[in-house]
Image 1 (spheres, one colour):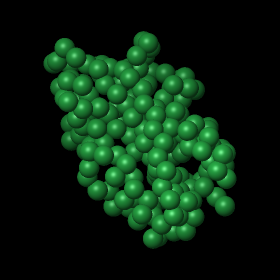
Image 2: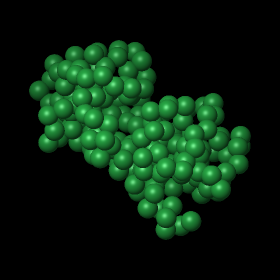
Image 3: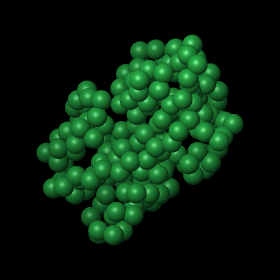
Image 4: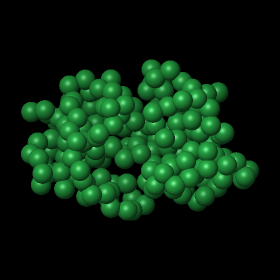
Length: 179
């Protein structure tokens, strides 16, 4: 049976295929509830997906937790980026002394019955935008112990340390043990 990554983002698919080469993407127009809990968001999407299509799926949700904003925006990062863009986020955060942030990827996998979650996170800080990227906040997120933002890194370098990579490897380990 084919494992489907529910995403319309070809760049996320390309990154995921570096870890899970045989996955295929499937685009489903799923409702996205608003919640500060990424697992709740993913679970609702997976429940909706199983009503539209049979099979095994996984969905990823990325959150950005900014310390000086008490963890905001978390899973609401998509909407904050849409409203004030990466420059607005950087301008807001750089007014504070604390620029620390955590990026977290949560993957939800469903075999049609059960849902399992896999999390990857990386610590870093918010900086003025540097580099070009296909991912919203990559130009303003600089991982700890690195001098470049995600957007400035070669894709192989980013993937070696990224939140998505960590979560995907956990999913891969799970699938190898349980399938």
